[in-house]
Structures are given as C-alpha cells and as structure tokens.
Length: 274
Image 1 (tube, rainbow, N blue to C red):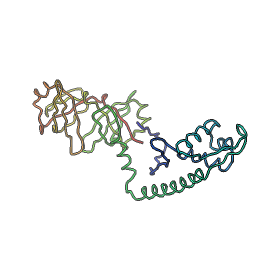
Image 2 (cartoon, helix red, strand yellow; image 1 turned 90 degrees about the vertical axis):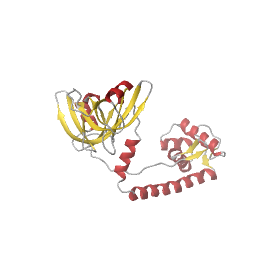
Image 3 (cartoon, rainbow, N blue to C red; image 1 turned 90 degrees about the horizontal axis):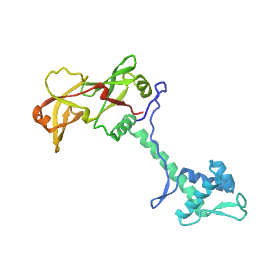
Image 4 (cartoon, rainbow, N blue to C red; image 1 turned 30 degrees about the vertical axis):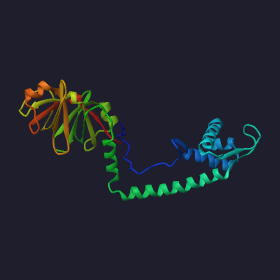
C-alpha cells in the first residue's frame, strides 16, 4: 500500500511514461542506453561516455554488446588501442537510432501533455484506477471517507463513511494513523476478510462486534461445506461472508432477504492510495 506523509502537501498527478525500442521480446534500448550512445558520439570514448552517464566501463560495454546483438548490426565500433584507448565511434545506424529515439520521445511527450490536459478529473480517475487494480487476499474492499478519528491511550478509532451512508469503525495504532496520513475528510479503504464477517437476520442483536452493516442478500454460492453469501449495502457496495451451509439454512438466507453483516473493529485493515 502506498503511504502518504501527513506533513507533505499533495502534489498534482500528471500523465507520465517512457519510450524504449524492442527487438522481439528483448529491449534494444531505452533512455539510459540511448544516452550512452549519445555520450559516445560526444566523447569519442567508452571510458568518457561511461563516466558521463554514470556507468562502469564494463556495464557500458555490456550494454553496447547487447545493443549490437539485438540490432543485428553494429551500432558502435572501437578502434584498436586497448581499454580506454583508441577511438570509439557510432556507425550510421547508431547515429540514426539516436535521432529516431529523439523524434519519438518528443512526440510521446506531446501526446502525454495533450492526454493530461484533455482528461477532466484525471487525478480522481487515476486514483480510482489504482484502487480497482489493487490485489489483496481480503475479499471485501470498501472505499470511503474518514468521518471521525477518536484518539485513545494506545490505539485510535477511525470511522470511515461509506458511499451509501453507513460507516465502518476500525481500530489502528497511533503509528498507523500517522504513517497513513489519516485525518478527517481524507479518502481511505477498508479491507475485511470474508471469513471475519458474521451474518445475522435483520433483527436488533446485542453483540460485541462494533460494525453491523445492513443490506439485502444479493447472491448465495454454495460449496461442499461452506457458502459464500454476498450482501448488497447499496447500489455500489457489497460485503461478502463465508459461512457454513448449515448457517445458510438456519438463517433462511436467500436472495432479496434483509440481513446484517457484522465484524469487529479490530478485523478491519485500513489503507490509502497516495
């Protein structure tokens, strides 16, 4: 999870990218290798070029050998004279490669600038892309806004408001609150494993689980022993629980039935996207 430093001001998000050449499945050259070729053109030596781009002499020659092999023709040729001696020059194909890369990179940069300027609300959309592309073992991934932070002696209680009006409470350490940059009004997501969720009939029940979310059963998927039961809290938010088939029968859970998903505040993992 990406962490955000609380005292650091949020910087605007821009579209970015990089250009590289490929030969089959192998990378022929990107910015670093093209910079090496350009430095060879300028200095006339491997030693000087390697120093200019911050490479070791061996790494520079390894890169040149790889480019020559992948290009199927020499891009760099070295005259006799030993290590660091003699002259090193680019072939016409090597010079053309630098020129072509420069032209493509300029067009690529213009494309990124146009794309960033044309997409309204890009920053918000990019954060959404980051959230929906997140990979985690927790089945339930709920996005919301921090409504309230209650400081305790050791831990903090974080209340996260969900889109449909309900809220989730999580208990985290002071250190986690600070390292995640949690504060009222900021966006965050809650992760809750399906095995941590208890389902109850839609009746008032007094239990120790702090979180009790009301919804309607949207899907019941039975297995050999257990069943996956999904509860729709609203049009966009669903909570899934794994319970036994016997519990499904006892509670009479079926699509459309009202139910409550309950889980402890200590079972909630909070995260942010920077």
